[in-house]
Length: 352
Ligand code: GDP
Image (cartoon, rainbow, N blue to C red; front, top):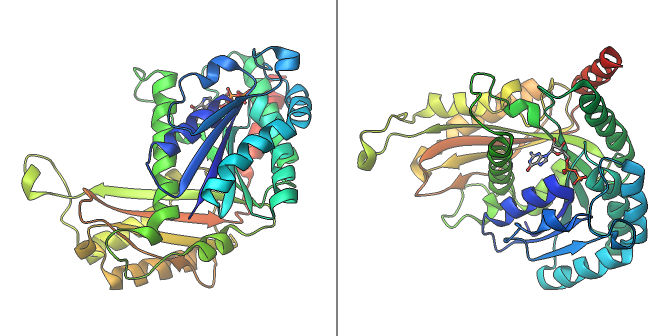
């Protein structure tokens, strides 16, 4: 699926850059920021643009949502001109604006750009919102991060066709204190880029799939009503004769079924929630062609349908003759359970 990624703010820029690192012909990417310095390391996006120079002189907006919004409004034509240059080259099937929800630039401005893109181009505009990990933060900073996230999420909701939620907290490793914050972000960004790319490019796999997950099916899964989505992923390394010293599974039907089932468990999701009652889903089993057992996929798909309460889960396999793993990626849309956000509200009350 041809996507024009727009990384808005620091987190968004880094994520768009990582997505561009997946080297897909169907991707183009641009980074937008109020802060010059945040754009410097983003070598893989096709273009980058500093906004709000008139006001902040390239020094960012702190975590001020309203300032982020004001700058977005005043910089619309600048952003649209640069985005349009890439749009003409790629002819995208959708725009996808990627941003942190807890900061100021992206959280405050992304929905304003989304509104304009939807009005001008009549293409779906999807959002990706990153929720913060606040462990170990001083209380004041934690309150600011959480309240910004809740406010920007509410503002965003009316302007996107769909919002994919990523919760950084899902990736915390409580047992590993050696990992720095930057390393954790990189791990998250790589994981998200991989999940999304496997879903969005499954239909374009070199080795022909048995069943193709085509663009209209992805679009139908995401919908256009501002639904909230999450992506589940479960993968196991396979045992390879060429790497006999490394551990790995010997795939069989049951293993693949377990992997598919595992892809929707709470800890496998980018945003933790009860997925029962969701409105749509798409499943991509990924691995070597000989391991993509049709019967296991059918059984796994039936399991998902029952757990989600969805009449038909869309699916397409992604065969890769060189894959070192067997995996399942499930995009779940229209999730009804936003209890995690209520938890954030409760935490703000506790700290205030
Ligand atoms: P902005 O530049 O004002 O839009 O704000 P930021 O993007 O810097 O920050 C928003 C939030 O995103 C931060 O509070 C972090 O929780 C998170 N964040 C920052 N960088 C990354 C990143 O590279 N990856 C992920 N997953 N989250 C990040």
